[in-house]
Every structure is written in C-alpha cells, then in structure tokens.
Length: 178
Image (cartoon, rainbow, N blue to C red; front, side):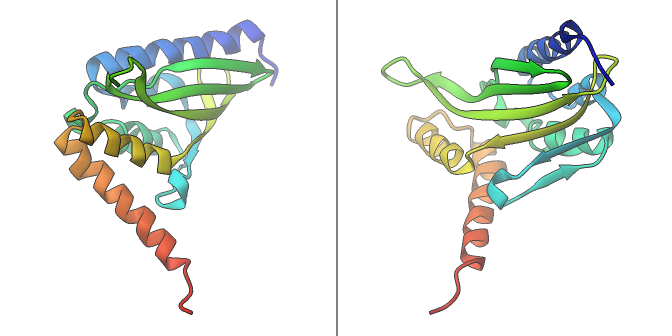
C-alpha cells in the first residue's frame, strides 16, 4: 500500500507528541491502542538478554508499553524523546533517547541513544516496529544515576538488577569451560 509522505510524517509526529504526554502521565500502555494496528508486531532484542517479540497490539501493550515502560513510579523523571526521524515510503527510521532524571554537573543529560525501524500501516497506525539500543550502555547509565542519587529504588530493584542478571547469565551461558 502506498501512503502520502504527509500521512506517514503525521503519524510519527503524533507518536512523538504521545511520548511527551506519556512522560507527563508516567503511563505508557495507552499508546499501543492509539498507534498500533491489531495485528502489529514489535521486536526489541534487549542485547539478547530478554528479547521481546510481541505479535499483536495486546502483546505490545502488555510487554513494551506495559511491563517495560509502565514500571510504576520507577520511570518517573525519565523521558524518551524522539529527537529525529526520516521517512521513506511507509518506512520510518526514528532516533530517540533514554533520558534519565536530572543533569550531570556539566549540564549534559544522563542519556543513551536508541533507534526504531517502524512500518506505517495506514489509518494513523503502525504495523511493525523494531527497537534497538545498547543495553550495556543503558546499565552503565543506570549505575551513573545511582551514584548521583538519581536512580529510583523501585526501578533499580524491578528492572536494572534483573536485567543485569539476565545479561550476566546470557554471557556466562556462552562461555565454554576450558
């Protein structure tokens, strides 16, 4: 299906605005219903430590925008701004930030980069999305936030520590005894 550039750009622009609203609410799951087709797919590798493959809108809501984004108040103060995007037909490339609370003493943000490859599917909604970011740098960022006293205890307990454990276990599983 062919869509006008304006239609595709409008959809990613609305998603960008929805992220700002979700940050304000500290609630993300509603985005799945507003921006994804019923049969949309979503994939994020999480560095191979916890791959997420959602096969429909309900699974996208439950995993990506639910479990991974709606981690209670642990994500309060975080933002995930879409800082740039490019459109080629129905394909969208977006660049975004995982931006932690506060700023460093030099005024820079505590943040890591991520990218999404999104396919627009008409009617203002997406049919697929692949997210990629460096989970190792994300864990290092969380360590830096903890050292600065800015990492929420619930986020550390419910997301950071379990993710670090998954990464370590995945790496150790691949190390053959000598």
